[in-house]
Amino acid sequence: LAPSAAYAWMTCPGYINATEHIPDAPSVFTAEGTVAHEVREMCLTLGLDVEDFVGARYTADGFGFEVTPQWAEWLQPGIDRVRDLGGELFVEHRVTLDRWMPGQFGTLDVGIVRDDLIVINDLKFGQGEAVSPVENAQLMIYALGFWDNIARHRTKAEDFLLIIDQPRIANAGGEWRTTLEDLLAFGERVKKAA
Image (cartoon, rainbow, N blue to C red; front, side, top):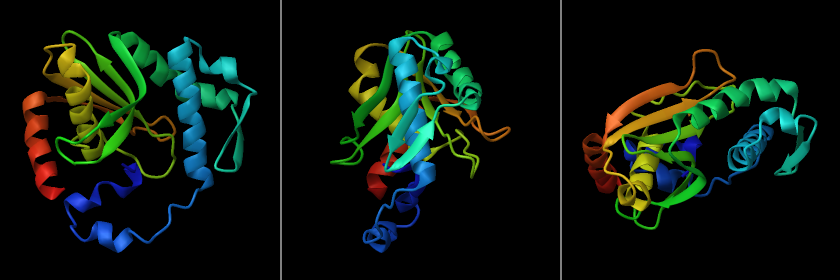
């Protein structure tokens, strides 16, 4: 599920047919995001900090990047926030969405299961458009998939915290709370649109 598509198919049924022949060409911007996600994943899974990667070089889609001290300033606060939330952590975890969108899946950046809360955390590393977590279709779909595949088997929590970490744009990202009841109602709309 490409975030760039913004789930246009939910409001424009012709979107999929109209765009099916447009190739997904790599760009320096998407490649940079891929590398930022890889660094963040390594920090969260290995217990490291971004400063441990400063000076390291990575390649994605033919583009090369060096992790700089600026990257540490951008990425570390979001990593620290994830760690502070506690709970059972799932990083770069694939979730199937068959209940609402047969044959579809998504890879969420971070999912957290706690006794009292289910958290979905998504990194947006781009500098273009600010993204809000409020009623964000991508995060809501990921939340449904994570709940269906993982969380409902580990917790009775029905409260969700959806977080977008967008460190390179001032006042972008943020967090939004919702409930399982509201997400399931949204899921019915997704199912109908799909």
